[in-house]
Length: 166
Image (cartoon, rainbow, N blue to C red; front, side, top):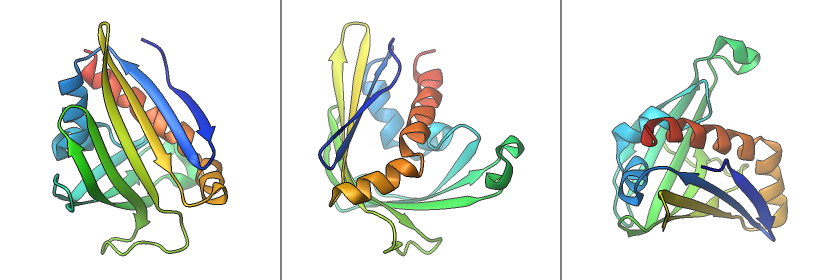
């Protein structure tokens, strides 16, 4: 299967990755806390789900912690996120807002909030995953790209592939 492809379309970051796994399995990896904790976050980071209400209007609050001493100054660093699910079409699509937050779930107003649409498409021998992260403006998108979002997301999709493509 091919590796991650990414491109910028206006104020939207589009990331695609094929998996040698069924659409149902890939969707499940995005829709259950135990699965997310196994792969969410860049390589060398551990994720802990605090809240996960997988329904429109429900929230997902999580903490990622760098556990890899080789990552230098990042070792021990925490990064919190908070999402609100907007639309769920089982095995086909998940739409949610995603924001940086603190441990109490308060959204950080200094960092961009994005609306993410994840699509799961049947392809021969697997699933094509397409993620569209839409920002309010091109500057916010650029800020997140400069923070390493493409590399980080690519890394976590590699982690997911190691689980679902067994």
